[in-house]
Length: 418
Image (cartoon, rainbow, N blue to C red; front, side):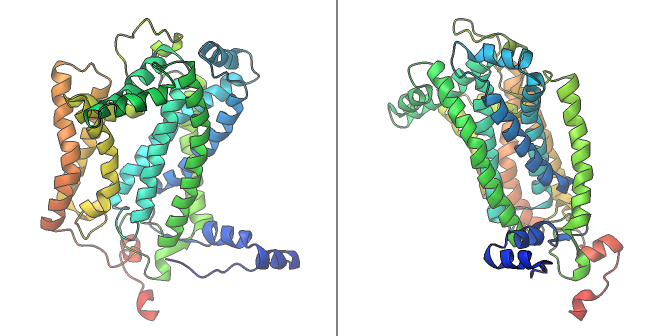
């Protein structure tokens, strides 16, 4: 997919600089002249949207860190002080809190788009795996950031989730206890835990930034996938990134920012939990402990397994299995658009993921546990059974010969000329 550079410096200074440090050439080749498939839809705008979300989170997070006090005595009050007394602190805090949810909304759409259109298939395996690592780092950063509020749900959420590592005692006696106490910095969740989480929460976004750079680099090596799943074969299949793809990304970003702003200015606390607006109290346990909404599907999987160790393995396995999708999917066709049978299974997978999110917010009892087990079974069956088997037996629909034919209904013959 590598394309020859068409960058030409227009000044003597530019030529001198380009011969020594070709940063402008790299930017031009990567974001101006880079060939993009001409049939990309608006689901492809979420890559750019996620980049903007990351920048927003880093800038707002650094600003908040200037006023935050990472101690059990001052953490909760310092957050309130930011909202009430710091100039525009309410706005910065709302942007950061809502930004976490917007980040996950965008990343889930980005992941499901990749799954639907087969963006994980060769030669994009490394691109996909880097994306899974970014997702894991996002989950770590958001979990530790949620703890910093030091409200009731934050405190007990940290207590429950970190205590899961004690299940490792069933594998190696004493290992789980050692890991849990290391995370806590003692024998229980305390100010020491908070201070550690604050340091790591500050660090992980920059790790994410590094992974994103690698992700974009890998993308520009192998090129973008598209709704047909076909590669660029002729000049008419592609358009330059600027202005075509950039303007489309701008429209998608503008629409996304409208939704973002609506939450920030009108319902900033809607996606949070009411219990988290009470200061952490180790002596009072909330009646129903739940994580943030974007963790709910994995929380449902955790609780669906009767064994503590089994639940932990299933929860982490539900994310790790994503790494192996490029090899689990045996179909020769990338896009689900041309896989009529698999399309129904993908719909069932989407319903299962949404249902797990709903069930994760419910008490772990009765019919909720039953359905959580049903949807957990299908979640894993989709990757471990449906993908390998259906890829072999399914007959795909007729596909266009090129991206140009998919868009125009005919091939302009450029491939033969070249």
